[in-house]
Length: 321
Image (cartoon, rainbow, N blue to C red; front, side):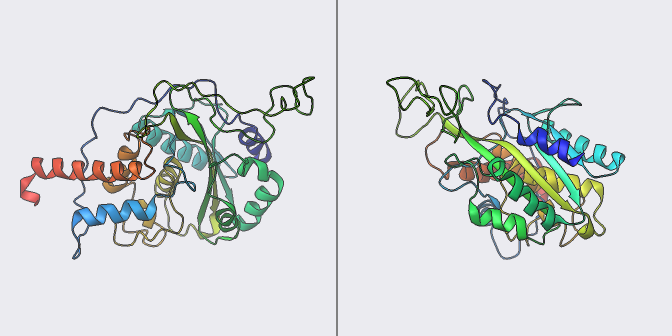
């Protein structure tokens, strides 16, 4: 079963033809942030520090997110547990404006449960390195992060692949090894470069402040070490997986002092699901204007979204100030 699921994800096309862009809501959903404990720091600085700490874009790229459809698969688990994880993660996908895949879809998010997480991760890298590091500019977090994926002792580890694409069409905006105009290895007489394929992007409007090239997540591998789940519930595990799947999260981020599902393995009794802090983060990410050239603009917009949500909450409930 693991082999079949891996084959489906590893052979999935990096970019679908002109996928439909997920339509964000016009304004951020009001969230409750009163479960955040402020200890000697302003809420504004806490928000900024949280976003800076956890956001982990690929080198020299802006934050990536899923464009539209996500299909979640889970293997090596009891059927009822696997169904629960898939259903809950898919529901969260719908909550942030994505389209969950129908039953039988080809997974682009694969949850792999194992009692030898390091062993499975190393085999995955050794046998399918090209699928994890596709070779295009800005498609992954690099060699050091891949080593950490293999050797980490964390209960859950993950690896994401993203692609620079044309924001208007979803077309690939970088050349990948093996992409050819003609059949690979064959050249057109008089054009020895025909075996190379470099995407051509039709620019609708040139600007020093904006760009048509954005980053889309296309694959996520999640390896769950069943020996280290301890008292974690299926709901907690599913929400943790959703958070690290739908956003690019730094596995080494220090999130102590924040009310977030990312603390669930250190403090399982402190959080039962995605917190309002987490929901605000995801809402902000999926409402950002991604076409700004400033690589930090997405982080700034995520932080601003959380601040606006908190201000609305304060206005609606002045007694909580």
